Structure formats: structure tokens, C-alpha cells
Image 1: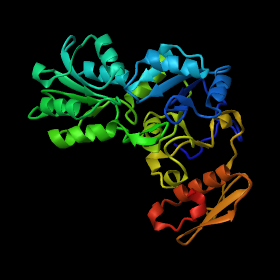
Image 2: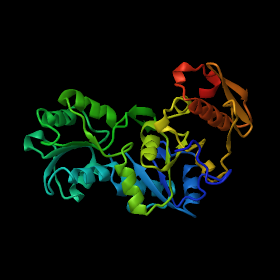
Image 3: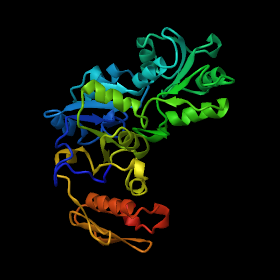
Image 4: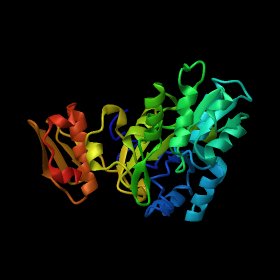
Amino acid sequence: MALFRRRTENAAPLDGVDVVLADLDGVVYKGPDAIPHAVDSLNRAAETVRVGYITNNASRTDASVAQHLTDLGLSVQPSDVVTSPQAAVRLLSRHVDPGSTVLVIGGDGLVDEVQKGGFGVTRSAEDEPAAVVQGFAPEVGWTQLAEAAFALQGRSESERPWIATNTDWTIPVARGIAPGNGTLVSAVHTAAGRLPLVAGKPEVAIFEEAVTRFGAKNPLFIGDRLDTDILGANRAGIASVLVLTGVDGAKQLLAADADSRPTYILRDLRQLSEPYPETQVAKNGAVTVGSAKVAIEGNDVRIVAEGDDEVNLLRAASAAIWNSGRAIYGLEVPESLYL
């Protein structure tokens, strides 16, 4: 996928899109509260395109997510929400027989989807489950993680599949960044000596479900994390937005590897409908975006012109570094670029 792929020169990210797929945590809300400008911007987008929501958070049902979004001021039905538990159950159905009993490590959202998929639910390894499905919930603790480890010890993937809804290391909440499902999955991995199959981002199953459900021909995905959101969208061949309102910021963006680079970089969701500036690359590799210009001279990333928009400066610096083919640790990057 080309950097900053353009539909037409200076087109807005929404131009030519038929479905917007938005992540939730860090994009629409943090904890219970909406991120500034997110609700108004998505409502404006919904006037011309279909808007769906994709979440790796396995702690709630699609109905509860839809209600939360509705309470924030969006118009959302449960069918507009694609969850990692839904993707996990589809993955589960490929590996165990219908009606099998499954050990569920997680919250109501995961239990609900497992039951809707036609499987029985247990919370104890002593019930000899056919598989283990693990997802994040705030109440998951040592007791539940130990049950997963007991169920998996001495069993191969073919004997007892282990499916994780997602492996996000962290999750943004109202008070800051907290441990995510990946941290809990790692604890089980350490005890059981096995790795899970993963259903959610950055794996493509959850994106494929969304594209199929909404009949998307030219979707645009919005996320706040490079290692799950943007990597997953790139794997699925979907144009992507990194919005700088969640987990990853300038420092992570400048260091992004080739598989985790977004099509667009936005300060907030208001910029979805604003013309996106052209990225101009000179023969010497210097990059200009708007009035900002960045060049690489030897090992130094040099700000030639700061311009009048710090996001354009970040866009120019990202393109210059990415186009250089050099790892970030081999370059001297001005502190002002990532602060």
C-alpha cells in the first residue's frame, strides 16, 4: 500500500468511501466519555456513508456497545457493531463441534456470543471443555487465568483449541492506559506453554466480517493503535486512518514499520471531511506537506520548515523517515517532532 494513498489530489479521507469502520477505545471514547469532536464528526460522516464499529474489547455485548454509543449521541444498532467475540466464535466453529462445552475466560460479551454460537459455557477446567476462549473483562483475575492454564496444560492445539479474542497489550480507560487482554493471554501462555489462535485485530477475520456484513467496496478504517488497528487494516487491504486521540502518538508513528503505516494521519475526527494535503517528495528525499518540510541529511532528520500545522510537520517527518528505508534508531530525530 502506497504511503498517503490519494484518491484525487487534496481529497478528504472520506471522499470515495462507502463504509467507515471505526474502532472504539481511543477513537470514539475513553472510558465512558466521548473523545472531543468524535461524535459530531461520525454523525456528519453518517449523512453520506455507512458507519460501522469494530472493537477488540470482549467485555461487552454488541447491544451494550450500541447503547453506549447511542447515549453518547450516535445512532447505532447492535448490528452496526462488530466485536472480537463474534470473530472468535466464528473461529471456534471451525475447530470444535456444534454444541460443545467451552471454557470461557472473560465477561458477558464473550459469554453471550459463545452461547449465540450454539456452544455451552463453563467456567471450570474440571468440566473437560472442548476448547478455551479468552477475552478481556475487568473482573478477570488469577482464578480465571488459572482455570485456563489448567485446561490447556498437556493438551495440543488439535486436542483443545485456545482462542483469544485479541492480544492488545494495553487498553485506554478514563484514568490512563491499563493492561489489556494481551497481558492476560501472556500470563496463561507462561503457565501453559502454548500460544492461542487470535480472532481480533490485527488478524483479518474481524475485518473480513465487517466488510462482508456492511457490503463494503471501498471501506476506510479508523484506529488509534499501529500494532493492532493499522496493521490489521493493512493486512486486510483496507485504507486506514491513525487518529491521534488514543494510544499511539508521534513517537510511535515515526518509528512505525512498513506493515503498520496508516494511509492518513489525523489530529482528530474533524479532519475526516477536510482536504488532506498532498505529500510532495523532492529528488533528494525531502518531504513537504502543506508549509512543513523535513529532510534527512546523513543521520539527521532535519526540520527545514516547521510550517503552520504541527500535524503536517508530523506527516512530512513520517513520510521522510519511512521513505528512507532506515530504522528509526539509526537516525537522530529532533525531540520537537515526537513531543
